[in-house]
Length: 214
Image (cartoon, rainbow, N blue to C red):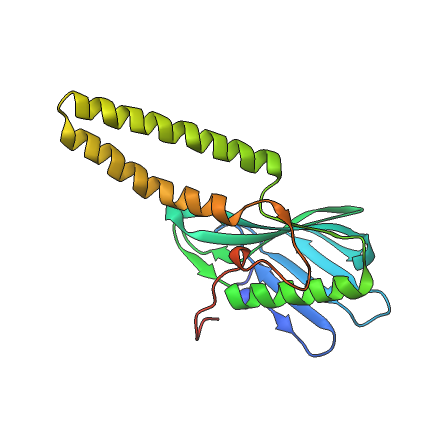
């Protein structure tokens, strides 16, 4: 099955024989990313394919997992797992596939299932993994400071407009700012930095699963 085929993005799952797969398409045009967790042998493996590049990494060589929330197009949400390890290019596993200029397909249930399988396997095969939630502290702090500066500037502009009798303009500034600020505020809240336990994944960094969703 070619990863360029749409049918390859059935998102995978557990085959019942120790192999758990997941696939998604990060861009509308281009190859998919596919990962396969293989726990059949004495040493667990993570097989990965990103475009024309592929490899096999022992689970004991994985050193860091990071869960984070990403802001998609038109304010849509995307959740991602970043995998780092020895001899392993940083892998990004996303919870949605890009299917059009603004359209995405949500793989929430399959994404969560793969996360659970990978964390459970790492608990058995490796004790040296760093589990990190959200953004790095320096990046999160920078975003928070920049957001505060922007909020202060917007408040000053709105107050200036009111003082000059331009109430409609002031209300428009405030209204548009609130609409644009909501997705950013959600991203900052979800991406609060800190460690997490592999047997208790942070719910704020997992997609919500609706009944009947693939």
